[in-house]
Structures are given as C-alpha cells and as structure tokens.
Amino acid sequence: MSRVVLSVVAAAMFALVSCSSEQPVEAPDSIVGFEGQTTSDAPAPPTTPAPTPTLVDPAGFLYESGGTSGYYFTTPSGLWRCAILADSAQGGSDNQMAGCQPKTSTDMPVAGAPLVQQFGSGAMGAPNAILVNSTDDARFASLSQALFWRMDETTPVLEYGQTLSVNGFSCNVQESGVSCRSDSSGRGFQFSTGGYAFEYVEALAAPAVEAPSLSAEPVLGRVWGPDQKGYGEVRPTDIYNGGSLSGLVENIVWQDWGGGQTTGTGVSRNVDKSSGVSNAPIEPVTIVGFDLGNCEGTLMYRSVVWFFPGNGGTFESAKDMSTNPCEENSYTDPDSGSSGGGTCGVVTAADGIPRDVLVSKGSVSCPEAMTVMNATYPTLYDKPLEYMEFAEWYCSINPAGETLFSCGDGHQEASSLVVIYRSMDDPYR
Image 1 (cartoon, rainbow, N blue to C red):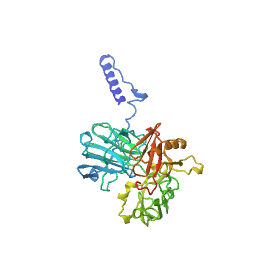
Image 2 (image 1 turned 30 degrees about the horizontal axis):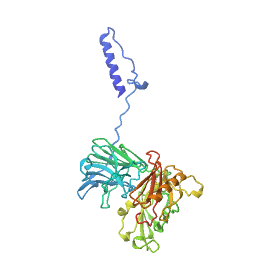
Image 3 (image 1 turned 135 degrees about the horizontal axis):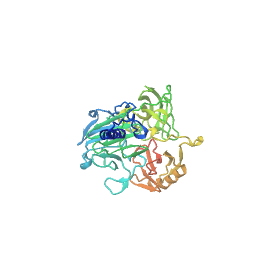
Image 4 (image 1 turned 180 degrees about the horizontal axis):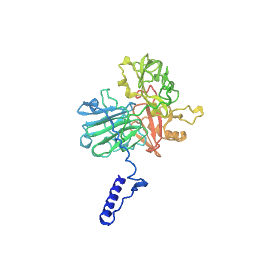
C-alpha cells in the first residue's frame, strides 16, 4: 500500500509542475518506491485470493439438554472436549461463550496454566477450563461442572484443519492445538498440553500426514513409561502399559492397519467382573488405534483405547479414556545409557506404595525432579483437593485419570512437568 500512496503523491507532484512551468516536464521512466522497488516498469504481481477456513455445517454439532444448548465437539485425539455455547445457563457475559475442558473432569493439563480462584471458595488452584465470551478477555477458569461436555457419548469430532463458526464464535483444531475466539471482539485463545497464548490462530487447511518414507507403516503410539510392550511397533500382537496386568492385551489381530483408524481384537482381564486383577476373567476385548499422524518424525496412531464389548462398551463410550502417547515424553530405559527420559526414582508416602517418578515434559534433571517429589507427594498423596508450591513448582493430586500426581514449574515457555502415573488397577484411573 505504501508504494501505491507514494506513486499517487509523486504523480500529483509531476502534474503540479507541468501546470506551473512554461516548458513541459517529462515524467521519469520509473519512480523509485519502497526499498528500491520501481512502480512503473515492473508489471503488477498477480493477485492470489486469500485462503479461507474450511467451515463445517454447525447443524451436525448442535446438542440441547437440561436447559443448555450449544455446538459440541471433541478433538481427533480425544484429549479435549469443547463447545460453542448458545445458552450455558450461567447468566451474565458467560451465558454465551466458547471453551474447552479435558476429557476427564480434572485440572487442565496445559503447561504454564496460571492458578485461578476456585469455584465456591477464595482459594487459588489449578483451572479446569479455558474459555472466551463475547465481551471479555479469554481466560482460564474453575467451573463447577463440565459445561463443555456433551453427555450422551456421541460427541462429533472436529477434524484437523476444520473450523466450526456459529453464534458469533469460531473454533478450530490443528495439529498444534485448539483455538477459539469471539468473532465480535476478536479476543480468543490457542492451547495444547505444551502451552497456551491468548490469541486466535486461523486454521486454513488440513495438514498432510508426513510419513518418513513412502514405504513406512504407522506404529502404535510410542513407549512413554517403564516395562511397556508393543507400543512403537507395527501390528503388535500384545501391548502392555506396565504395572498392573489389567493393562495387558494379548493375541491381537488387527484390521485396516495403515488407514486413518485401525481396530484389533484380543483378550484382556476384565476387572469390572471381579474384585481384583488376580481373579479377573480373561475375555474378548476390542482395541482401537486412531488419530493417525506425525509424532516427532514418526508416523503413528497417536491415541489408543480398548474396551470390552461384553460389558456394553463401544469406541464412542471408551474414547474419552484413551491413552495419548504422543502427548508424553518418549521413554528410554535409564539402564540403556541413553540421555532420553525414564524413571528418575521412586517416592513413597505413608500408604507404603512405591511410586515411579517420571519427567513427562521439559528438560528438568532427575535430581531436581526427585527433590520436588520428595518434598510434595508424601504431604499431598491423600489430599486431592489441595495443592502445594515448592520453589517455582506447583504440585497437586489429580482426582482421576492416568496421572496420579503432577508438578509443573509454572513457566509458559519451555515448561517442565514431573508426574506419577496411576497403576492400571487404580479405581480412579
């Protein structure tokens, strides 16, 4: 635009000179514009239409129940539940808003997320939602309920590169995370487990799956903890999460391997039909690998879940309990001599249960991780509603889900996360 304005001004000056001089004045062959570019000799560059978002039909996402209505979606990984709420029943500026919560009703596993005032009290604690309404800045919040969840277990997926735009809000999902905004105010957010920013990022196209080579086949996730089996392999016949034998699936036969979603059948211990793992019956199980994509240079099914059809389980009902190995640091056996991740050590609280300590994200050293865990976990292990600060670390019990206890260093950039995972037979996993 600067060259155009400059050209117009220059042309006007030449016109004035022509009118006021007795001798005609010839315009120069070219007029130098910004950064030495010329505006008359070179042909104008061809104009390319600006790319536009790939919009989806909002009707497929509409859901109304219990006095609330909105447009609900989940991410391809199953890690987040989000919605554009037309009527949240909250009243005030939050009656209409867009936001997200985790797949389990626990704290937001977002690196660097700030402490917020907890619902119903003046205490400060971890948020369980991120949201933006039509007038205020985007924010993290502590909500009294799962406002952004659709409770009928049929939440549609908003695929990578797609945008849901309705009721004055827009949300999209990209490989880098989820982003939502108020279309009227322009305020919004983007976030992933790795961090956040209070700004909206447009999704202009679905990303292509970048396979390392044309002949490469996808693997099933990757190893993220000790004693695991089958992860990081092509068509594994057995997989094991480590720890309890309830996390073992054997004799797997796969179908549609290499497609966007693969399904296998095998057998596992059905602990829902017993009082413990040792006497649990071994029954048929269905295992699903989904969210096919590139994870740090490896083509993989980035999310995995299994369920017992004999218990009435389905992929849709089990999806929210999926494992997302790409969201965790890759694990390397510390005895291998590698500098990669691994178990830093063991911490034990008054319950007498030894717990492995792992660095889930960041570059924190094992000595520092153990110092933090020894100073916090024995105090908080039986206090799920409390948190503790140690130096710059913020630590708390996660009431449910794969992670039992976590400590984050609180920095938005290059943050670190140290965790203790629940065993597979833990009733709150």
